[in-house]
Image (cartoon, rainbow, N blue to C red; front, side, top):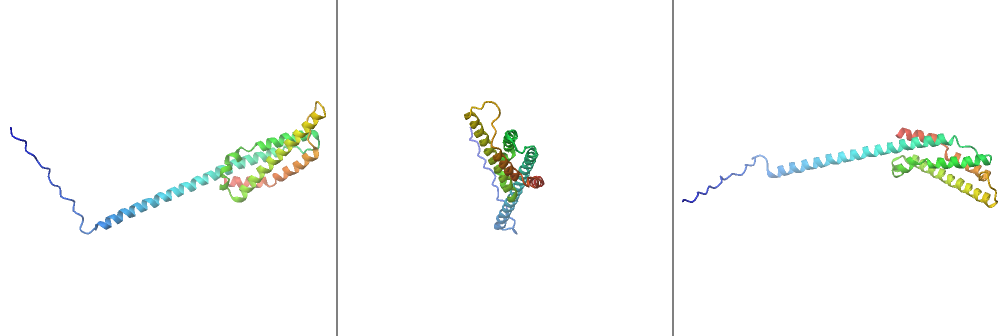
Length: 189
């Protein structure tokens, strides 16, 4: 038997380079194309980030505007504590006001997106209401302890009326200009 003949593959000639286009020009075109693609990608990322930031600011502002509007409405129902019965009701109303802070808690990490003055007013308002609520709760507990120490059974623990009136004045101060803040936040949302 004869050995099979070995057939060599045909020789392929390299593709000729166009005589008018040097190699460095092709490399330059490739680099410029990559740079343009990179710049376009960067601009898209910056635009998306701005859009996301704007949407977060709108969401925080809208949530705070709704919550502060509800708090303002609830504040109008808070009784002025001229006597012991109104004092107990005042304590419960202030505690309820302090508990209306879900939007503030949720948006606390994004308050920096709001204008500086609005963010400061929001923070000061919530801090003031929380402080007043803690104070009146402490006063109410102290009144309950005094009532138990005096062995007066029955009735309700009544905080000091003068302290409650002072707390009401502080609460009114905390709610000053909240309606304007709500309007500002509603415009942002």
